[in-house]
Length: 316
Image (cartoon, rainbow, N blue to C red; front, side):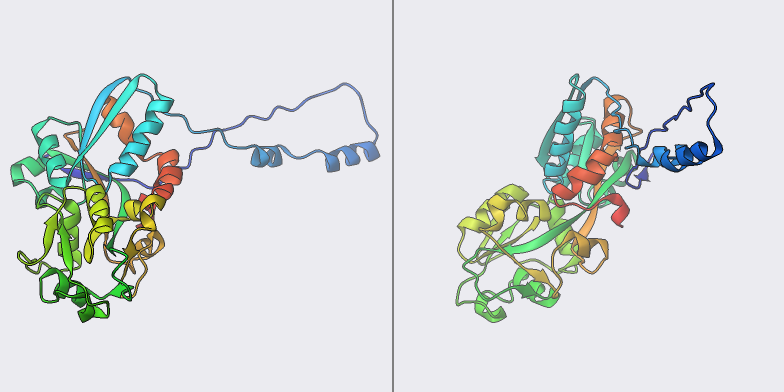
């Protein structure tokens, strides 16, 4: 059976340095020798002060395609851009579509990598899920956001979220906000964001089907809809919320009094978080394997991931 999970820590790559010693036929007096020893750093000191060599990228030419989670899409796109810059002969095309779509497509062999916020077994038939290998590349978090006209609301408890998303509460004044109807903006059933929120916050409660609801097919579309819809509420990835172009247009809420931050994801005090999974159909090879290795390298884990508001694998 090929099903399995590859889980790595962030990589620290250093190059070994060789320090040579010079010899001379001149003879120095004992005093001069002592002075030279005091003034000359040891080989160990020289090695410690020499910067480590930059990590190298395993470049493989060709083209691959990823599809799936839009919550992971900004990270994968930035990693793909960085890999292509280091390896001009490689092309990594990054598509969205939702976790369910990515998993179905990688299982069918129509894409090389399926990005998912949830485990394959939760979206696929057992036989299809068993073919896939999971590569965990990051930790990610989501935040409940509202239109800025929802004033006076900075935190929602788990129970308040349940009451809102099941349709029990239909006006923001029921949770300390203005007299304004609540507009729920859902994701489609294929969405990993929706599945994660339903599991971790709503506890599997039956979501509202009537009243004022909308459905948008990606984190980006949800973000835009919330900013343009009075009384709207939805759930988006940290990467979308922390984008300066979006943040000033949204009201981001605490969950059970805990701030939605990567630090709180890392210390497990913020519960709306999950692994970022990149699935392959069997063992990865060629450009697919090289790109996955790059995702686990220091450039992505140490630089791109924190810039894009994700957590490194080591932060679990």
